[in-house]
Length: 251
Image 1 (spheres, rainbow, N blue to C red):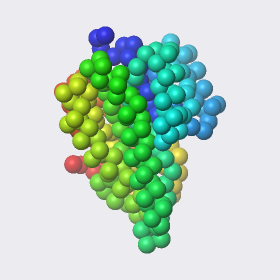
Image 2: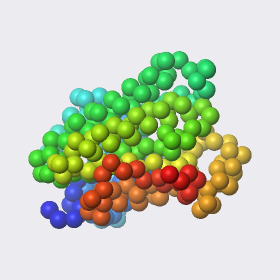
Image 3: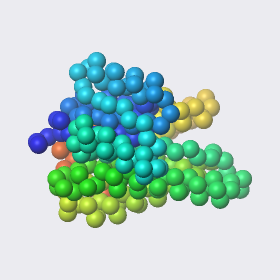
């Protein structure tokens, strides 16, 4: 197979927000997209229907990506329909506490770390056999700028995503010889998502003022960076991190 047309992309947590925007864009670029979700059948079906209306190919599959049995079942269903997963976009976001460290329990901090790494571990393990067999694969993890630039109350998410980013580098080193690239997309504050609702109007104004490009990130901005990493254009990039933040942080 040449290019990415016809490739199978699994986008976890893609019934809304960044995941949905990514699923739509990858489908528009010719991939067959698995819209993974956990809670909303209606939202996932709407994403699939929208892709179909544009001439693309997609299926919705419910699975908790922290659960090996559920993920194995999802991969089997995809395999029966389309074959192995070529592109993994791990976007699913597990719950986390927003509070200062002084008020946080180990269950809240450690639980988020466990959820984050367990999900990445389980879903990556599940897609690797097919990628390894064909000597080609793309793995893209969604991180966050909070893993580099702390913000009040976000220690659980920022710490967990920092662990995910380092995990990705180790995988990039190990999987490169097998033709599999592993990269991270780190958005800054994103508008039009559930997380954006935790910011009040004053915080949002401050963040926009601190962004040279003059607005917050939109889901489609993140999707475009993911699509680049999923394509042949990024063939010689692995272990890298793309900051999608409009210049709010430069590193």
